[in-house]
Length: 241
Image 1 (cartoon, rainbow, N blue to C red):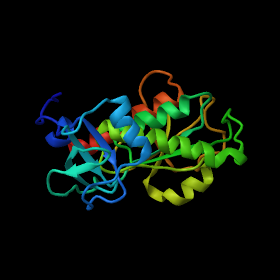
Image 2: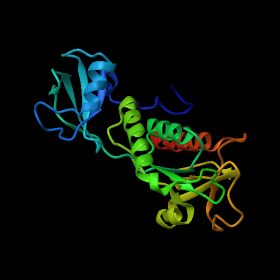
Image 3: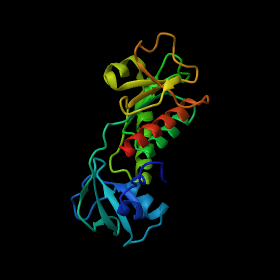
Image 4: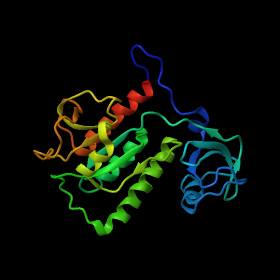
């Protein structure tokens, strides 16, 4: 893909892109590298890879290395590469959505390279949050994000937080925060943490005066669509430098 006035966008490292699979491991410096049970099942049973095929392994913190698939393990096939953390870090927070729409948003935001995702508990969030199931939900979102990160060849795993009330998140984000509202300005990296409200909109006094507002386009979007659109805009802006 090209864009007017600039060179081609930089894609993933050719070795990462060409690998038959990308997995996350606990110890990147061992020989051989040990893969988890779920990853082993995915490599051998789902993808049906064979020993000798090229696979990349990553620690989820920016370090990765090329490997070859062995019998139940990965054999190092090159030196460890350390990739710099992209700046600024991008956060997308969005109101909890019904059904599997929150899952979908986590998956797509991960693929886009968003660094942090925060499900929001806003005044008009329609989902009734069951705190007794918080750990189970967060574990599922973390698993979805990890699988999407492997598919996207990410070398850093994003953070998926537990659902958080809007005031609590704003107090943590400080001046980096902005909120999505119709008629808002073009999103930019001067405010790399964006909050997306529920489809009923923000409560009348929910957002503090002076909070920067950004728009997500000329149409009315579902919460998860707006979150992904704004995440894509911020990720592209960062990639363009």
